[in-house]
Amino acid sequence: MKLLIIDDEDAVRSRLADSLGEIQGLEVSSCAPRAGGINQRILEGKPDVIVIDIRMPGGALDLVRTIKSGTHPPVVIAMSSSSSIQYRVACHNAGAEYFFDKIREQARLVEAVAEL
Image 1 (cartoon, helix red, strand yellow):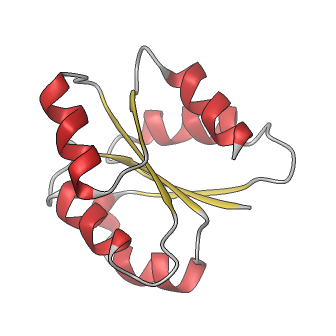
Image 2: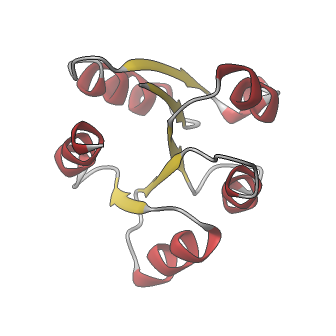
């Protein structure tokens, strides 16, 4: 299974990649939104799961909507350092299957991926 982490913080991408990389059979890659070409990377890499920070520059919720509008879209796991109910609802409405607080719920995020 292929998983792509999209986050603007290098430390978060690295920490998540290390944690998720321990899951047997999971191929983890990551990118920053400023790297450009996220849509192209998703099209070419065809990840089964995307973990995305919704509070990134550039409108992550719009990206989630775009991802989910395709044929056979990947599972989207939204995360943010702000876990207010408004963010959770917005992510759900955009099409994300899961939402986790990226600071306090990282272990739960890893568990959810392991169960996919």
